[in-house]
Length: 398
Image (cartoon, rainbow, N blue to C red; front, side, top):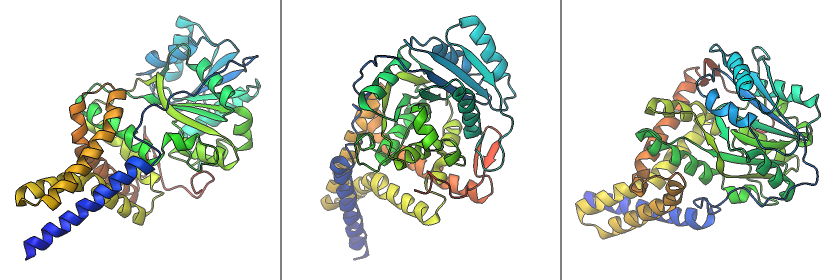
């Protein structure tokens, strides 16, 4: 009797998981599709002046692979690069100047704002300083891009042409992350897949939609919009600054577009699980707004959606229960099928698709670890800085 009750409970849970996957498949903005690329482009009659702002802290290891690509942009209008050295100890600023002298290209200004004051994250303090330097020159657009992001020569031109054609205040591309080590293959495509599940790209660009997100590695932002939305001051405490920026822009009536990149790549390596773990866990609990109940709901949701299907399959095979096996197998099949497009986008073998429950379990542990580190007083730790729970600021509490 007890075993029958357990089988029945697993069967019902598997059925709920299958229902959840059918809803995700059809009703969550077709998040699993990877064809949301740079929108239609139209060259403006006069190409606007663009200021490229690059916050950089201890980035000497990746700068030779990224900064020359910015300096080499084939942009028909005027563009300048402002690299803000955020308290680096590895010679980032000096290396940037050397690279500019060696490669030439767009004008480069290297500056440092000093340590951020209380209430600011280091990156956003650096962005504020860079925007301030650029604003004196009167740019019409700002390209906010990270120091580990490499751009193809026509990247800036395409971003501006897309913003002009679509009337967007923000055009952002999710840079293609590096996928070379075993752990990168297991974790990185899933990272983008989970992000798209939370923020379906199709909904972000739709008029009237409240879904807002951007990818901090590549954000083209209209300078007038930034000033109107008080960016970055209004989001100065945001650990997940790209989503906060998009919310601030949308909250002020602006239009945002986000999609997958074809010509923008991250060159930062994450060869070990430890490296990827730190990348995810430093901001996972901030994504949940530091709310214990939201954390519990997230853990339960991850378990229901990603872990129940393989457990139901194993239980069904062990007990010979078709009512447990079939919904579990169908849910796992739908899950696997929705992951295949992302693996193809990252040019990865499709045998990784059925392993998504294992990767989801890793993300569950990373999320829990993020909360544990927060309550230990370590907050969101990154490159020698630790950020405690922020006070309510515009863009994070909307």
